[in-house]
Length: 135
Image (tube, rainbow, N blue to C red; front, side, top):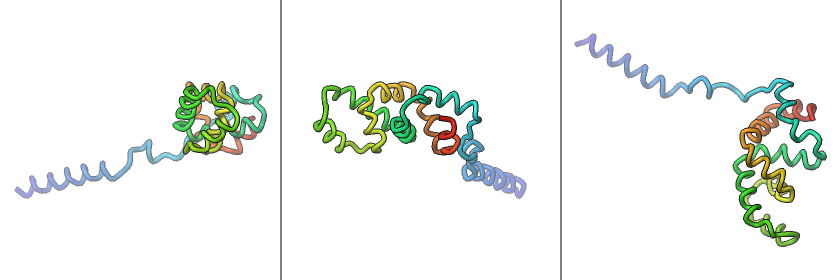
């Protein structure tokens, strides 16, 4: 009887322990990219003007908002000027994402290549100096 009780206690501790301790992948810090990986990630935007490049880098840290903005921009493609500016003010997106609505090809590229956008955002957040040095 005592042996059975002892085994149940061990089993309970093991089960509780697996729930409390996070899996290994969650315990890791942010991914660090090698210089070659950064060059590959940044190649599609390396020659863009600095002002646009900075907006792309910031917007890449909000990939869901990029997708939302791209869909919104396609639905409202006839909006221009003050009407567009006023409509964008009402959107909850980061200003960097809003600014890309004026560059529909860039916004669409970021939305369609979401894995790339996510990697770009991760690299920018984790290695800002390396990213800026690469471009």
